[in-house]
Amino acid sequence: MADDGSNFTYTYQADDDGTMWTWFGDKGSDNYFKGTLSDDGKTIMGRWHWPGGGFDATSNRLPD
Image (cartoon, rainbow, N blue to C red; front, side, top):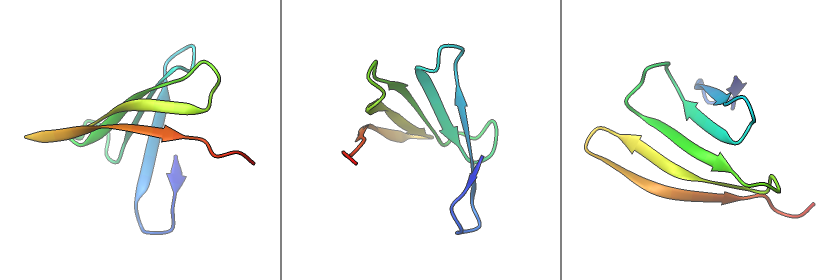
């Protein structure tokens, strides 16, 4: 879990090989992100889901 200082707590889960990531606030929430980590560990591609909507998202790690 991570606390970003804004009174929200986020839970992250990964499958056994670490390639499928799920993010959500409350467990069982209808609002969640589910994405796949690239082989090089630099990109997560997935989809935000919520009742009646959602969108695709890609996050890239910036160079150090």
